[in-house]
Amino acid sequence: MQKINIMTSCDEKLIEYVFLQLKSIQMNLKDKQVDFYLFYHNICEDILNALEKYCLYLGNINFIRIYIENIEPYKLLTDPSEIMGESNTGRWPCEAYFSFLCHNFLPKTVERILYIDAGDIIFTGDIDEFYNCDFSNRFIIGTANMYKSPNRGNLFYKEEDLMDYNSIMRIRMGLINSGSYMINIKKFNEENITIDKYYDVMYKTKEILKNENHKYHGDQGLLSLAFVGNITFYIYNQNLDLYYRPYNHMTNQYFKPLAYTPKIIHFIRWKPWNGKMLYLEELVLKEKLSKYEIIFFEYWYKLERIVYLEKKLLNI
Image (cartoon, rainbow, N blue to C red):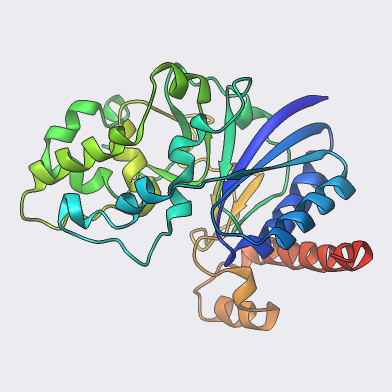
């Protein structure tokens, strides 16, 4: 049985939905032994104990808690006004950036890990192809959010593009979607990546943009700025579809039948916990949600019912 590593990070606002994520992992990765790392700063002991008990019940998931005591270094990423003169406060909490330094807290035996957003990511199939993908000596493997050019000979941004105003304006929105991505822990350790890596690129961005709005789009924007040219984009077949996204299928973007089978679903706009089926059907009628994606929400609600019953059985 292959052992794989998965991590997430959150506060108490989203922790309840991690139970559903764990259930989706157990149901779809039955042939895997999963070490599941939860990075947190402010989650009560009762909830942590309940998660641990639930993972023991699920059987193939080893729940590992990673307490981040000092969140001061991350606060400057959440509210970078001290460096960049602009604030992102209120959109992304400190926990959204815990993956940036996760290599400092993981066991030395861990060489790669799959990061998933807490709450709005669920598994619907096997992830072997993505998890075992070759990093090509880069820091991250991610799902493409944008390319430099539609010209296939000039698809990707490079590090030198950080000297170009127009390139930075695009890169800071995120070259990848950070809902799920692979982290090359081995390379992070070898290169001794510290918080200064992120601070430095923030200063560099401010220098190029000068008096413009210096905001970046949360963790995916800053990751893209920090590792531009060092990201492997997961593309099944460049001649088929540059936006092949089975391992980070983002809902609310596809209004025709899919050309692939999603294995990881990312609810990027309408969150399942914000409305039941009647509400979703209304969104379909208003053409704000694809009828082809209702099935993913139905699956989420199925998980919700199963988890409710199992938690009741376990008295947690």
